[in-house]
Length: 301
Image 1 (cartoon, rainbow, N blue to C red):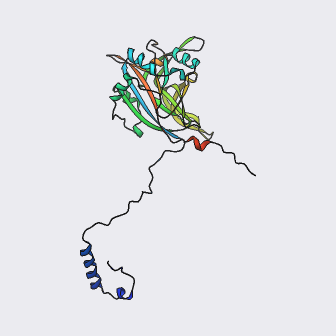
Image 2 (image 1 turned 135 degrees about the vertical axis):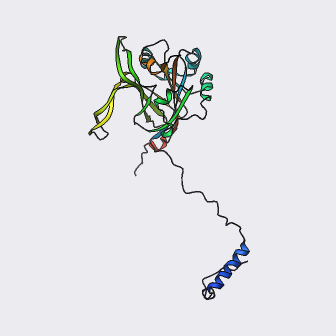
């Protein structure tokens, strides 16, 4: 057993040459064996999203307009009853179809999504961009994070020089209007529920016109000049659904409603073909824990 060097008088009296010799002797005895460090759990934790944050996976699936399988049997697994009857009726009248996929993925969709393995988009958290949708892959996939109650936009298709839109109101009356330099988009907001689920709300909008300085009200109630474009918000077509992690909100168009708002959002005409778009928004992750939201009554004696 090797003696332990202590701060004694003998050790203090060693000269420089003696200390060097002693160091070389110890090095020769120990050799090049590396020092073993104990297995200690790292104090550095993996980064976590904020308590009111969540992550969404977004898929755009492109296929020929009116495909019988993707417009028929695939929707047998999608629950359209998650939306109220009045909401479904108004959306269908304007060319939209929406529902929730909470169970098994339809075989037709699973086959298409399998071709997207490993695909991602450039930018922040593989953020979806309208320019990527123009390239016409079978599936475009994106992923992003957002905060509860905060607005996030999903651009649908490319900007068009002119977009003529036919609208049908609840009474069945039809009106029309054209928008110049129009970009269809979906405004998305998410709200955390006490049981850990998320209510996802979507509003169709059209951003149109030229960019200009516009007055806007910030979160503090102050007026500010912000660059932007005019926006037509279809608030009467807002819809939402409650999702658990892994569930998907599905949205597309009704192929027979050509010229409708939903048709312009989820179809694209090219020189060779007309494609239909199916949107899937999947709740990927949430940092919310409903256990911490419960109120506890403490009895005072």
